[in-house]
Image (tube, rainbow, N blue to C red):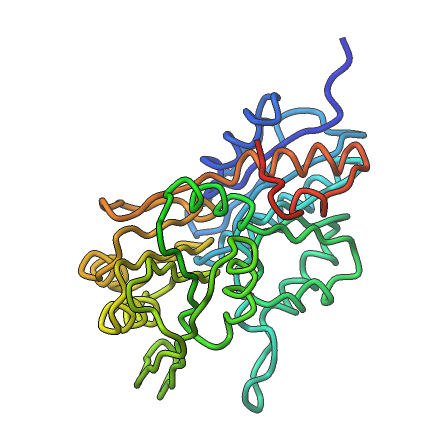
Length: 316
């Protein structure tokens, strides 16, 4: 019996998701190992033959930096083991917020990461909801940039909210909120914020009428939760009937969970691109596994991926 051409492997921090992707793809997870040394170094290895195989390595690159290093070492190991094709599946692409020079003498972290991935030897990248779309242009290889909207749309429709309205927690997310509003045939509002320093919002104002509406704030990332919780409070103060939040990547750093627990949000809807820490009642986690499995299948069969994101397509 011929072995399957596709092999799905995972770094340690994304194994929980890789197992669901492999299950949705109807294959077994590949066998790999990481050996830790006493000085903090580690070594990765594949514990099965991958010569001539199409290797998909699942690993999000959130902190610590060991996660990106582990991914790079697995790519290198696959290249040296004569894999036919190496595809990095990075559900959460870390350092994506460092996509430009916003002041003199700083690094462009996302460009550095793309250089490392390309130089190490990936043939393709699959990721979802990059913080900055232009990062695709940092690569000279194919990038499949997926959108979590295909997962969020069906869930939002299932809520049957009578006066649904989309909103963005900042002006940078206006395009995203407008896209959701168009897809769901609703209006949208924008929160305008001013920062005095990173992760600290000085003041915020609302553009749009939310009175009597069931508002859903949409963002790609919830990190410290300062901006989105402030936006949620402002929306309720302006007379909204209810407020929810959706975000693809639930980083939840610092005291984010406490802020969210104390917030007026009815629920916070996120995906599993980052492993769930200790949860709380307000968080609803939707899986990306079926979407990634479908994209892997389409990559292998040279089928259209963009058609997945046509209005109302959905992922079954």
